[in-house]
Image (cartoon, rainbow, N blue to C red; front, side):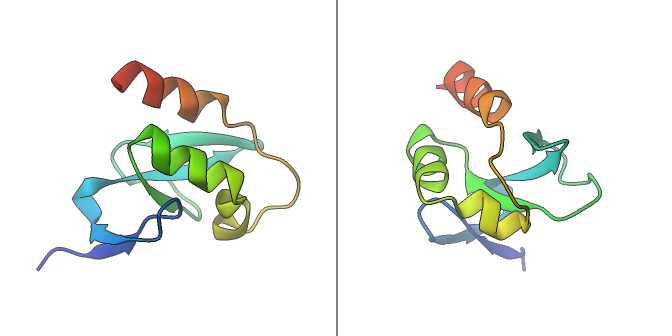
Length: 83
C-alpha cells in the first residue's frame, strides 16, 4: 500500500507519488523531485492552482515551520514550465 500525504494547497489526501515534495533551503522553496532531501518537507499537487492556494494561505510557512517570508520563485517557475 502506497503512503498517503495531504496537499498543503487544496488539503486533499493523495498518494505520495501524485504529489511534489517541497523543502526550504536558505529561505527558498525548492522542489524535491526524488523526495530524498534532508529536512522537513511539505507536499503539494504539481499544479498552479494548488501552489497558488498554498502561497496565498501561507501553508508552506506553517507546514515547514519557518518564520518570515519564503522565496517561491523557483517552485513557481517549475510549475509554469510544466503547465
